Image (tube, rainbow, N blue to C red; front, side, top):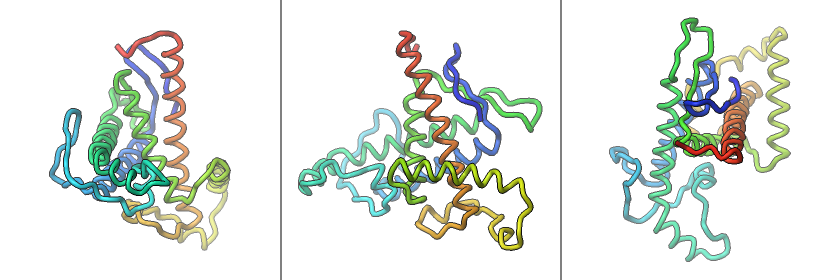
Length: 231
């Protein structure tokens, strides 16, 4: 994965196939999690200009609680009213941008002739904020699943992921071999006990999403300072 760079077409990076596939799958999993926890009906199409009414469901999953937190920590009535008025639209917006993100990286603008090469991912300037927001939602869910609550936890995870990359270059022991297979789905996004190798795998996804998000936001800020418009 290369950092995003500003270009005439928007913001451009090159992602390996596995990076695109994993991040797209995780984004779709998070979208379905948000849909289910917030009470959005499976058949409802969400997108710009769609408004919903009805009683908002309070999320029970701690990861979705990070995405749709209480608006007021000290006044339950205010928090309930705010959730009733805004949550369904907020949840629908998150689902829409997560799915748009997944579709965008599933269909990169330029596919290389060499399948071992990285494909070019182009983010139009008018879509960049939504793209970065989807990466934020993915990282928040992964952070909850990995038990991270502060910057120290994030730094420790980065160190663990880097250490895992070094270990992968060494011969594996018989005990390590049992951890080789990473499941196709993250246990339905429920809290589970992760082995060291699984933690490094999902930690690597978290780190990759953060790298992409940070480089994209940096380029967006550089464009803003330079006075370049979204158009």
